[in-house]
Amino acid sequence: MVRYATLLALVVLTGCGYHLAGEQRGLPDDIHSLSVGTVVNRSQEYGLEKTLAFAFEREIHERGHFQLIEDPAGGDAVLTGTIRDIRVRPVAFDANDQAVQYQLTVILDLTLTRHSDGQVLWHVRDLSELDEYSVSSNVVVTSSATFQQSTLNASDVQNPQFTHIQLAETERRRALTRLLKQAVRDAYNQMVEAF
Image 1 (cartoon, rainbow, N blue to C red):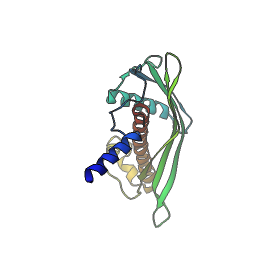
Image 2: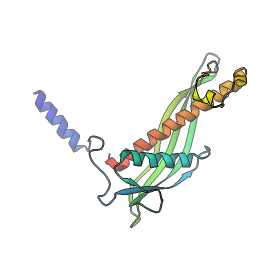
Image 3: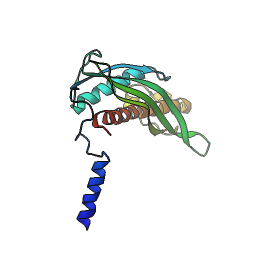
């Protein structure tokens, strides 16, 4: 009975399109190389388009399914996109009604287009990823890389207002980096593995 139930579950899952990551490619067989083209940044976060483009290039290179062509005019297909928005909102507060945890959301539109004929091979609109980060005005980690690289210095630690703002910004940037990596990973999986 257990074998029958397992076999039935496998048949159902296979019929629904589920498979192991890396097992199947969802792009046409003539696509062997990818390039990253223009990324438009409509958020208020300066330079984020370069960070996202670089993250896609790194993901393509590290996955190894496709050759990465650095020239946006090269490759069998080009990935382009728009960063539509970056949203930050407080989600937890301390006893003094100060925000101690924030939710960070990125919203992307992405398109993969075949170079030879301009056919859209994959498109996603409103891809939304979120992450959370915490801040605390009472904690300064003097051994942290941020402190060591002079983003913070010893005199700043004496000013609780500055330290709180600086640590919050540091944590926000770390969360944004994590968020972009996750967005790129999820987009790549959707694009390449036909989920």
